[in-house]
Amino acid sequence: MYIMVSYDIVDDKTRLKVLNFLKNFGDRVQLSVFECNLNEEQFKRMKQGIEKLIDRKEDRVRYYRICSACIKRVQISGWGEVINNDDFQII
Image (cartoon, rainbow, N blue to C red; front, side, top):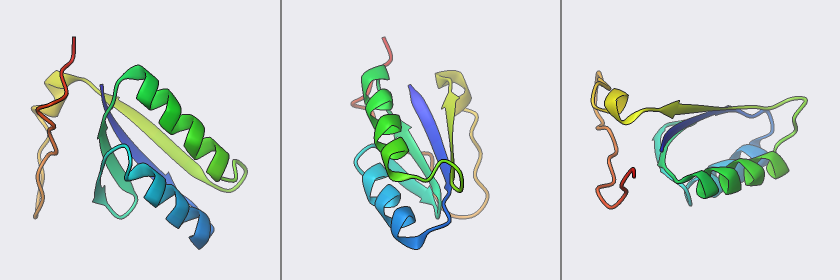
């Protein structure tokens, strides 16, 4: 599944930890946005890891599931491209 993760984290150290953690799961496309191709188990592991890092009273992380048809309709203004990992297949 294709997941877009966005975060708003107050503490600089925590934000850096989350950023480095998310690099293991996807590609950074904005300062606080990652795009990830994950299976259900990977998504669960990613979400649990993030929840261990953040302060749930001050920080916010959002996970958007994007269907494969919607990925094809993503448009970008400015530089960049939609990250599409051909090794990943939806079955």
